[in-house]
Length: 278
Image (cartoon, rainbow, N blue to C red; front, side, top):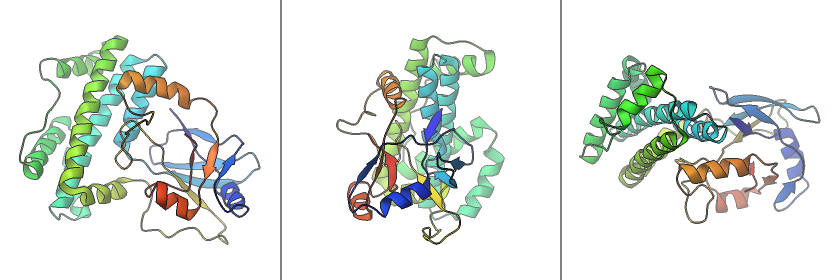
């Protein structure tokens, strides 16, 4: 999966020349996904900067699954969809624990014994749902989707495109249901947990124009999106089949758009100043 980044120095220089928004008719740096969310960018002019991708794991993993489907790799798609769901279990659990007032450091220690054991993570998710929402969450069907997943992940089964899409749709539905529940029950803990789990340091101040090293931050819109869920005529609305078509569109050359501080907070309060033009 390729992500579009930007050069903070070029963006800063362009922003000094405008009062409103500006479309930049130039290519932007791209990179393969990095696990830590940090990217060293070298633009065409020769600027070297660091850019942080402000997205959390399960958002990106599901997007990786969609990209795998677009490229014709249904088995890799099922693997990414599965990982996305498991990382959502962790996210849900952390939101529930944050809601209960447990310190982040304690959460990190408590998660360690479960970090490599899927069944324990599932149990933690179910328990968190019982505590937070008072009900057992909907899970993968133990007679259909679980055997299918295990066959793909553990036995090397190569699924058809239709099977992978069906599984992806189920995972999408389960995560959407969980996120809607979290937004309704405790949106504050939801957002604070997102910030804690993001590669971006939300406690760090903004760059100074006089700084020797500018650090940029970019957030990409994803099919499963905690802060900016798809709605209305958004191209991200729809099932996995629709998302595959979106991936094809997003792989076309794009412009970038600079927003003023006022425009950014008015239209996208949780987004960064420099973003892909949609």
